[in-house]
Length: 90
Image (cartoon, rainbow, N blue to C red; front, side):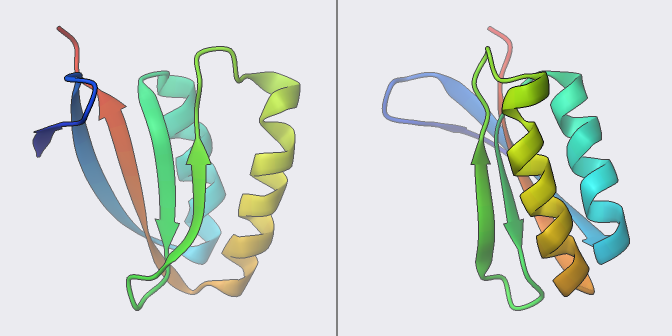
């Protein structure tokens, strides 16, 4: 799905259904791809549990606290949805 946000940049939204054990692995993979702007984790009921804004300079040590928090959240969830907001290439 592609949509336009207020600043007229095109972004796309993808959703992945994963188990609690797979959350951290999937999030690390999405961050490594490099084009994710935000990652949102939702529980089984569709309620937002965590949102991680990703900026161009956020790598390594800056992401460590977020990844630790994702690991803690993942331990509490059995099934969840990862929503990824990506910047579309112009």
